[in-house]
Length: 190
Length: 222
Length: 147
Image (cartoon, rainbow over all chains, first blue to last red; front, side, top):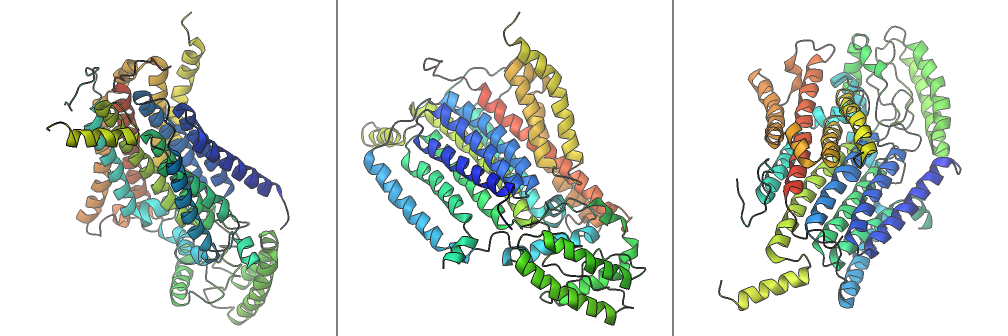
């Protein structure tokens, strides 16, 4: 196909993601680490757009670069500002473990589908069937919404329940946040 | 071996990103930074899945809105296409459900064969797609000449295209959409736990936490 | 001249537009990228922006935490309620075709998707808001000494 602009965009996004990831590894200031995570999510959202995944890019930009950063900043303000440096043994053990896991994943790469193949096994059966069947089953142009809400409605129901449960857990742990409770106390309170 | 890796070279930087996130989780003692690393790991896994679903020369999986307007014309064509797709999922000409104009079958099939050629020229792997589509176009023209009176006009099969247009695979998008939102929910619960740990122990470094637990178990009487 | 004057003025202009954009994303999720999750997050972000600029108490007066808690449960209720409605109408759970008799244009599917995405919008926006309120209402014991 040749070397075109989208490939340049992809390579530059990958390079920026690697740089930001490396910076997060080395950063000890938690404020900087949290903001770099937001930057990481935003770069991933840009790469999702380049990969033709527009719904996912929208969600990642809103959730990853938006809500997630706010929550991590809120937690960071309540806990600590700096991370302690770990011991050398811990870092070397982590490096060994991560290298082993990475080598195992690299070993599995030849079994992955070819990048960009329209008729790879991953893109052939059910995914292709959803694209073909959506106009006559659901008659909705956005196939991702059709699959999410109709073909796989059970999973979306479960996901909504999971989010609700997370809200319940946070309320149980941190309090209901009602208007009059402005003081911190030792135990949970209604 | 090298060309096998060259076709799948995009997965390597993504795996490196995953391993960076995992390294942060294991190597750091600070609980908030551990959750930061976990969030990076999770975003990289999402990247891996979406990369699998990418199709060269493809569009985002949003069909043109004109398709759901021609429901009545394709009553029998849809059923025939349905049965054929269920019966022969590996045959070359897959009957596309939104088949064109049920009125005249030979004409749009010819037009489709002509339409498939420029569409093929646009797709990423032009070489093998052109070969496949050229042979399929010949088959389709042959097929059309044979089955000129059937309701299911054999459309040209451009290696996974729908009406000559390639789309990205929608299934990983759906799964990852769910995963991202669930991920932020679990991140919130994890951060709430870290806040409570900080208030109970006064620290969020795991070495200090385990030392405090150990001395609480062995030292005082609780 | 209070500090942050520009922030206050600009956010007063922007926050209604953010809410309108969230509604646009919600209702055009069928025709373009979007849907309940994205719209819910954008709605929550509008209220969070208001809380950041005008203070947490003003935001709690605008959208009380009890409303957010009720909204979270309401969304799940709507979703499961649609499933039970299809059950009571005679079909399988979450089988949207029975919701409307016009099968030719798949109106049942459209109604089902609309209601389900409304439920998702309600839950996601309320949950994000609940979590934000919970974190923001907690008084830190660091007391800004490290800033």
